[in-house]
Length: 381
Image 1 (cartoon, rainbow, N blue to C red):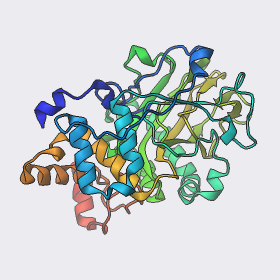
Image 2: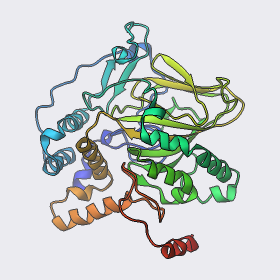
Image 3: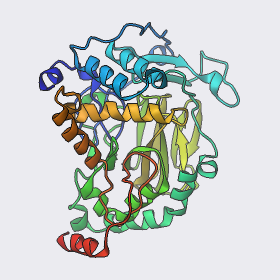
Image 4: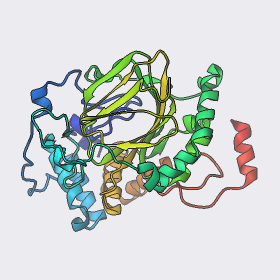
């Protein structure tokens, strides 16, 4: 398996923090993938046709080994769209489409609209809606996070006001590490809690109330992190390249809240962040942002699996990411696979003792551990 990893095309890796996709280079918390510093109108408004993916991948490659494992672990008819997505990524296909007709109300002027999708990591057949309105009212997990807003905000501001405590975290306020990520600008920084379904134990312990709120909300979360944006900075129009996750923001600290100083545009519509109001949108559609105030803006950001995905498709996509992290899952040796499966399960367990599991990836099912163990754990901390 290790030899196979050496033959893996770079575009199969992806990074956490700013873009969630099959990606372009090895993971680094807080880094981005693929993002261009500028996007011309011609490029943004270009469209592509999905090529044929009827031919199976060669089993002598890493991608082929992943496909073979997917076929063995899942009923192929249940994950047909995931297999198509993986094959499209292998041939380097980048999906581009005008999605104005999927908006409410529909947008028909493709020549002037910015409602275009760009998704090199693309699962066919998923709805491409720029703004998922009423998410905070209709989705149970969004309601749960909204109810936890004050405790999340208070914990966040408390830790932020204690530099010594903040120094205990891992990769605190990491910026984009790639020159391809210039569209985010120097003002964008992240502090990761959950990456590819794996909790960052140090940061989860640094923000226990927030981590528990996420874990107990039942959100189908793949990533979770705080994001900061410096005053008088902007993020240029870009896509986050993946259509099978949506992005959710819980605004925590918004300068001049309600005065339209901090704004987010997705497609053709611009809205302001409002403290405590959960928003859900599709970042495979071109979007940009601005902090036009004189103070820092802070949000809690989640990547959640697209609601149109089935349970089997989510599990298959998560398995792909597990293979990228733990290639021993593809070994021909049953013992090696077993150990890799245990490792994959362990790294997704919720690290805070005494917490309920969530319905999404990153949670751990099972009962609470004993108070005695919790106290001993706390003492070691």
